[in-house]
Length: 196
Image 1: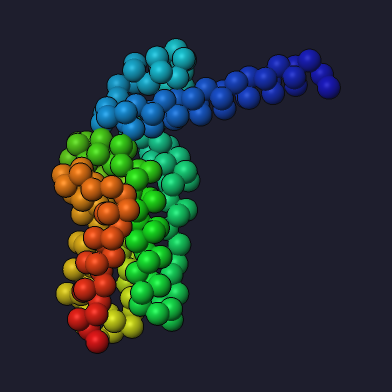
Image 2: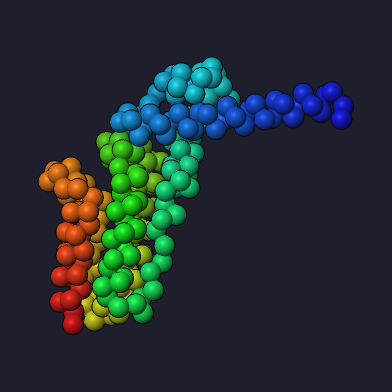
């Protein structure tokens, strides 16, 4: 292989590593509680020059968008379809298991994102996409019950099974993961059994 090709390949690989390091650094800073890391802090954390951040990204919002995609790849795969044909108890159990796993994994980044939501269109869109995904899962999973009760029930389920409710159980009330799961199960079951 010609030397020029090897050096070009090396630059491309180094560029990809630097780009990934910038995204990883952004996400790490957010997860540690910094809702709006500066490009300088991201560069320092990534171990790259500040100009390298702007070589790979147009602006800090672009880095945030890439960090949001990485966060989704790492954690959101746990939200899977739950067959509406299953008995109610099993559907509730699967939703609770999936959400508690997801919410525990994303909690640090979610807390930071909520602080920056009003100032960042990227974060606002990221949070809304998550809400839509979770709402759709509830609508599909509990379609039989929703066919009888409709929008009010979906709204109630969405509030009960939200990250905000989970955060309240875990941080405000100090419940363990297992205790919070039991409460969430009880809430969803009570709402859904009213439709019978």
